[in-house]
Length: 191
Image 1 (cartoon, one colour):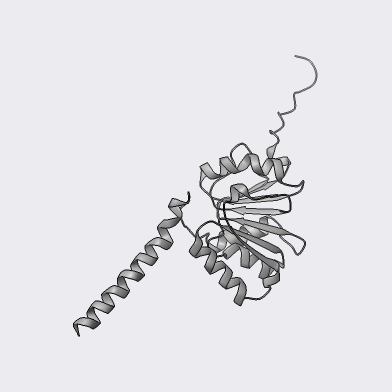
Image 2: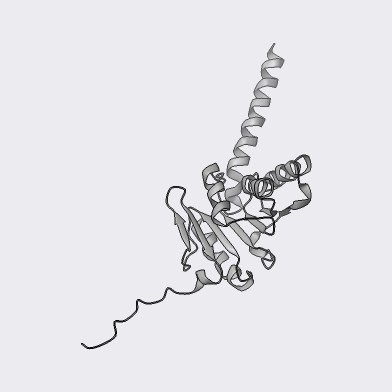
């Protein structure tokens, strides 16, 4: 009986350590793990008007809520980018056993070193510092007409095309998002 108690305690300890790693390891990679709420995922993809001709890059893909929804519901191509190895393994397993695997690419690595020239949609739920660091890379590589959709944190210095307060989702269209807003028209005529 004592051996069984030790075995159960050991298994519980391993499960606890695994869960703690899953949640907190991403802090070591520069961002905390917080899944994007389902309503926000749906709003992000609707806002971006995702369709079969799109290639969606999901930055910090986590366990794939956006990646798999974009492919299943909208028939888009999707690239899930994740730096944390256990989540990459989960994403790859989900890709292998799920439908439409040929439309999904999983990349293990740092999205600051990714090439965005083939992206038509970029989705992100990143901390403000990461959004600020990512902005110049997006500005130099996004093709005209690309859409960037962010949950919770705006792209600093960009003007959103739309904002949904209920889900805290921002939509940007490139290159319009990077242009400063036009000043109000000056009245013409006398003083």
